Amino acid sequence: MKALHPEDFKVTSRFAIAGCKTSIGHPGTHDELKEALGEVSKQLGKLQDKMYANNRYSVLIVLQGMDTSGKDSLIKQVFKNFNARGVNVFSFKQPTALELKHDYLWRHYVALPERGKFAVFNRSHYENVLVTRVHPDYLLKENLPGIEAVGDIPADFWAQRFKQINDFERHVAQNGTVVLKFFLNISKEEQRQRLLRRLNLKNHNWKFSPADLDERQLWDEYQKYYEEAINHTSTAHAPWYCIPADSKKTARLLVAKAILHELEKYDFHEPEVDETVLENINAYKRKLESEDGR
Image 1 (cartoon, rainbow, N blue to C red):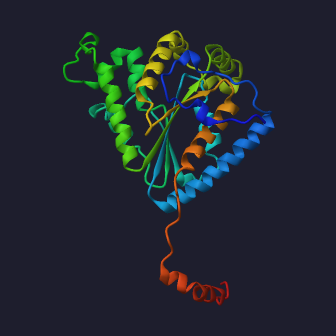
Image 2: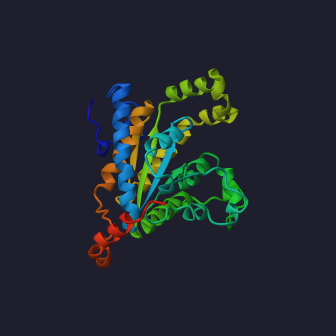
Image 3: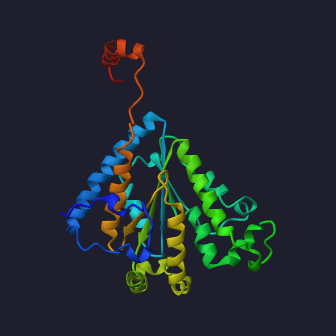
């Protein structure tokens, strides 16, 4: 199987979405990719166990992408070997009435992972510089001071939001949360095929919404704003990866490898065992072994 190097897809300089591939051909057969993902997933599961025992770090995985880019299935496959208590997934839809009573980052702060755990944001705080840019009228629901109409949005508003997001991510990173962000980059043609599949397969009809077609008409705007958001927010403490996602299996493996590659840089060691326990291990064993099993 062709070697895949996640660092090749890390955004470390000026990013142009047109230069980000949606496909890298066929790095391996179906079975090879499945086997490779299974192995990386197992390694991640073991690493999360160590991270839990270490109790110093947590991990935030941000997944963004156009409709049908494969976020849900990626989560299912990449994290399948985790202890269920070790990972929490949050899918951020339209803000609720309660959430709109707070600033836009509030609901993301309260969903951050505990030490020793992973959190996956399936869509994230980046919706607030993507969807709201394509549909600026959504911003009016936030009841921001001085913004009564779309025309009131100041020229530097989005630059301020990028700074706020960078500050948010820097803050959580400095306090022990590893932040990794993935843009699942599919082609417009691949999206068309996946939407058709939802319509052609009866058991997938429920996934389709007429709104998907409306949003598809805004493809170029979304691409423009993704590019701008990634350029303003890919940092050393919270990097973006632009993942070719026309092949779901390849995308899953690349994301898994990128997470493992980053986390292997950390020394997640188990806490030292209390000296009293170490000195009396044999005594504890004898006591348990002497029980009759009833």
